[in-house]
Structure formats: structure tokens, C-alpha cells
Amino acid sequence: MKKILLINLILFQSLIFSQESLSGKYCHSFDDNYSCVNFLENRRFEYNSGGDLGDSYIGAGKYQLVNKELILIFDKAEKVYQSIIEIKSIQTKSNDSIKLNFHFFDSNKIELPFTYVGKDSLSTFSADKFGNLEIIEPKNTSENTYKIWFIGYETLSINLKMDSDKEIIIFLSQWTPKIISSEIIKYELIEIRDSYFKTSESHPYHPYEKNGLIYKKVIK
Image (tube, rainbow, N blue to C red; front, side, top):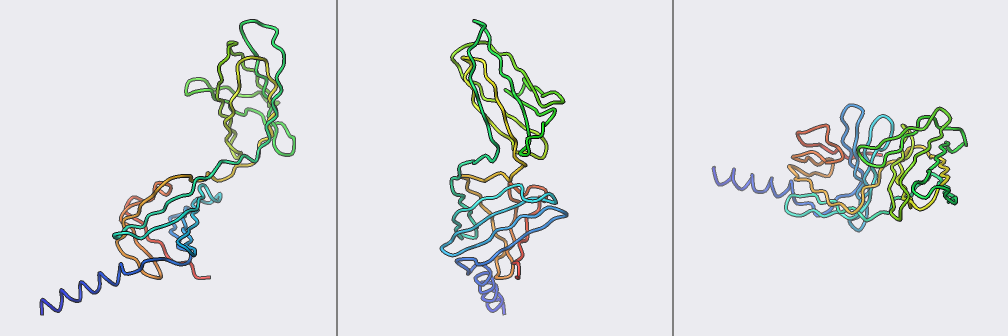
């Protein structure tokens, strides 16, 4: 009897993990949040996750099923900004400082007041009610990186040389999902079937549920 139970258990475990590939779209949802993996031909996949405002993260790549693990290998993807940035260098009158004049608009050329500009964790500036901001920096040959953000719009990073005054006009596009690039994410699988798969832990881009996830196949 024990031998029969042992054989049945082995057969059951083999059945659970016998699949070498997946096909179709599987999703997990929790409150207003979701994450989905769409398994395509040639071991390709597409990933997206987000909440009630839409996708927060997207990505694509190749997947592997190895030793009870689902491995998502994300393609390298270049970040493409939808926002428009215009930079004009102006001859500097001062010998020891430069002025960076920022002007912020949305894609309809309407001023974006109180847009934030950060140079580092300690230096954050805010535009005025007309979307204008002037920053004075020491004049030198170095290059500073500025992070620009406004709620509901793209977050940008721009590099500016500190060698001359500049007029920076930025037309911010509405917010777009972050692209997952050149990452490898592994799921330890508890169970895998054609209609669902179950993991033992959460996904780094889906961290709000800590006890593993159940992805159910989406039936069109």
C-alpha cells in the first residue's frame, strides 16, 4: 500500500511539473493591482503590471522553465521619452556662475506650475505658478544631471554642461509605464498547470502580496 501511495505521489509531482513551456496569458490580481505574463511562441513573453491607473511596469523577453523555476529574462530596452526637450546655450556674462532657466509646459503648451527639478537627494527646486524656474550654478567644465518630475507626467533625466547660461524648454508628456530592462526574475513554482501556476514568493514589481502568487490563465 505504501509503495502504491509513493508511486502515486511521484506521478502527481511529475504531472505538476511536467510542462516544458507555457502558452497564453496568465494574470494575478489583488485589490486594484494586477500583474500578467503573456507566454508567446519561441519561449517569448510579455509582462505588464499596475493598478487602477493602468500599467506601472512593462517588459518583454525570453523565459525558461528549469528545475521548478520560472525564469523571466527581460530584453535590454532603451528608455524613449515622449516629452520634448529644447536646450539653447547663451553666452554667459558672469565669470564664475551660470543661469539655468527652465520653462515647463504640457503637450498642449499649457504651463505646468510647480514642476520639480532635483540635482541630488539634497537639492530640489520647484517652478513657480507659471512653470518657470531659475537655478544658479558655479561655472565650470563639469556636467550635472537633473531629474524632472510632475505628478501624472513622465519623469525625465537630462545632463547639462555647466559652461554657459541655458534656456531649457520642456513639454512634458503624460506618464508612461516604466520599462523593465536587462533584468532576470525568478519564480519558484509550487504548482504549474495549463489553467494556472502558483509561486512560493512575490514578484519584485508586484510586492504587495508576500505569500506567493497564483496566476490564472485568461480565457478569451
